[in-house]
Image 1: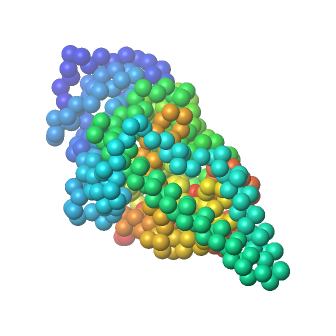
Image 2 (image 1 turned 120 degrees about the horizontal axis):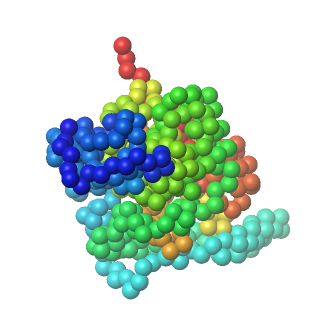
Image 3 (image 1 turned 30 degrees about the vertical axis):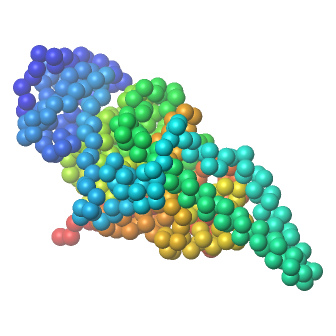
Length: 436
């Protein structure tokens, strides 16, 4: 136990503004996993509003502010060329520089912050959809008339559309690499650096409006027992994650939140009367085998080392514990119903089985004026990482989860091959039971 400091002041607060002594005892140093000591002069069971935690093994100290333990320590990514099973997903200044040099993005000089949506504006979706349907009308008419030149003309339209989309994606990839490099040089590559001043009311919903999200998650978790179980929500957020938190609380689970966004944690504690900690998802500050389940919805696409994220979740789960992941599908058909173009359709379907045939992944996203790192995975890529991290795959699916035209895209879920083009990967994985 560490010695109390003169600045260590604690106040008896209601749960909304304080953290319980019992919860503090479950925390561990995010760097060395050592036990954390604290001093309390209040009655047993009271809540701590302000103070600090200390780690005896490594000597680090962590503050408690507004009832939230601040245990954020950024994970140091391995250097390029080091022994890492999935180096292509690492995001550090050195890795960005290496990737940018390969495609010439290191030579791009940006005069202003790029808009990831600027390469393809949503207003183009309707015209492109109409164009692609018109091309199909022309192809069918040419086949009916037996007019080979006309068939070639309309077929060439699909080829031109495919080439232009491929060029647009490669160009966007280069500019996004250049922008992320610029962020890294300014020291604002991590989301914590660009969300620190955002109030919870303005916290970005990273994927826009999501309809019936609760129903989708509940359907995947059908049969999983939560009564009395301890659930960790990594990226618990604030207002935007309320529906997901309710899924577990309504089933009798004890919920713990983790996020890098302090205003969101305050909202989480106030609304759900649950404990929360400000920490890095790659350094989860809890002991081994602490939780029965971990919720990782819409988070793995944001972290700078997704494999480390999975390893940390595996570590804090008890044997038999589960992990739910939801993340954008890299094979999804976007941009004006891209699957209407047969070349884009076959590229998406083929990429589901052979990710190397896909265009470069997205690297950034924008919501309001908030621009940040954001990527995607194919089902094969994600399940490979989960398996390597030690998880067993209980269930995996590709579902219509967000965005326009969801009712139509829901019908694609049951159609072979077409379902691979839906927008979101759902994976329910499990940590194996310890053999006797």
